[in-house]
Length: 228
Image 1: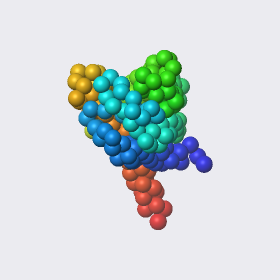
Image 2: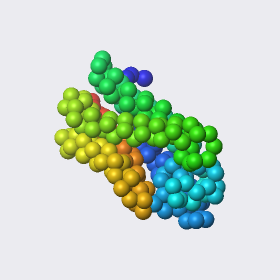
Image 3: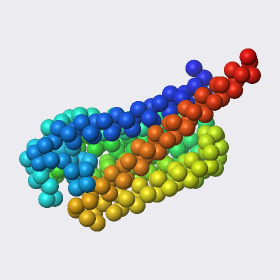
Image 4: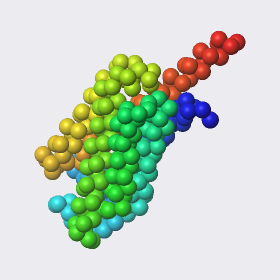
């Protein structure tokens, strides 16, 4: 398979990754009914805590399907990095390749840490610290990658995507970082702000993957017409 053929594969991986996260989060949240899970108040990490009945930072935590969410955390990191690498490697090389791929790989490491170490006060003292560090790395790197993709004219040109996409990438990554910074402003809306910092790169993944696929289909159609 030629290097360019990896582009649509990477695009599909990016889209599937975002979908699996949203589905896993919805299923896990629906299984949590005592007390009801709140998308606005509860952190996403609460869904992965295995300690049912724990009270942490004023929140009652009980996630019966925590294994599903932790699996999704790890899978998300790995699939995001794989998708970015499959899309980027055929297009860039040298320093630019390292600049693009390094945040993606760091993001994967961060979310594997999120899956392995849980966001509660239960268990070993280092567990919560490693969880927070992993989440911080993952969120920062994914949103920064979106900003860099939009800010780089050369990368945008190689992707063959329109200027509005570059504006979108910078905007969604910046808003994601800003939303994450506001997470601690209000306990009643902490989950909503945290989701702003996560859904930003999930949306970026879907849009990027969709546009890359559309470009590939258009290119294939042009070649087919020329050869016909």
